[in-house]
Image 1 (tube, helix red, strand yellow):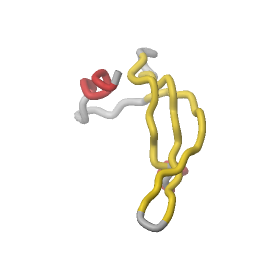
Image 2 (tube, rainbow, N blue to C red):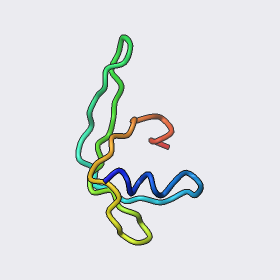
Image 3 (cartoon, rainbow, N blue to C red):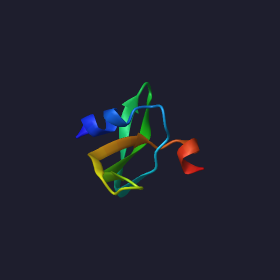
Amino acid sequence: MRKKLQQLGPQMRHVFIGRFERVGYKKSYRYCRPTLLLTHVALAETGELITDHLWLNYTKGFLA
């Protein structure tokens, strides 16, 4: 599934739609950092399924 994501490449920006599943945590040096799990990630323009899941860092930039 990740091959489709890789084929899109970094040349253009894309808009994706995904289903929020849950918040998780990953251990970092001395503390845990929050992450988000998105499932059924698809291109917004075509609705083509790109990957079955993605873990994203839950950062201040993501909140904005």
